[in-house]
Length: 222
Image (cartoon, rainbow, N blue to C red; front, side, top):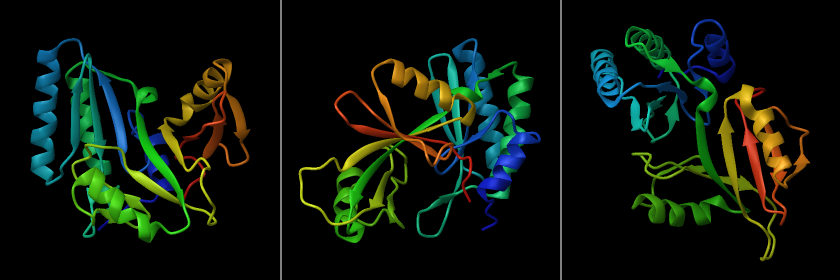
């Protein structure tokens, strides 16, 4: 599989793929559509282009928008961005321009659930079975639903500890250019910055009761 590293993906975005952003697994784009008919025409064109090159994009029609995510499934169920995904993204951007659609790269987002655990091999089959219907949809340290019906669950390694202690938190993946504004909005709404030492890769926030969330971007990652 001809996978592309995150730094190389970011370079491609900076030099021609401005519609797209790197999230946890895929590259993603959102386009504003003026009406459902034009949205459907665009989706049909994307589907045809994808079939031609043997790719399988994720496409979601929303109210006034079309969301797309591109990644390639590996032999063990993982998802990685490949050179073929990058080329399909270029084609999709061209199709969007031809259909008169407006790119909204700052609006792409991905929600990932993170669970602190000292033994992910013990708990991951349970969460895989519960969320996906089978215990073997675990790729490394993450449960990935093959059809992406539910958010992925990432197991964050931690020391063994008794409960109660907050063990769940949300990882919110955003386009890098909107992360600071989103953090500022959350702080203005009563939150606090707990740890910004790893920013812009991730910043830890807490709500007024101390529940934590990480705002993540693809910057400063391998």
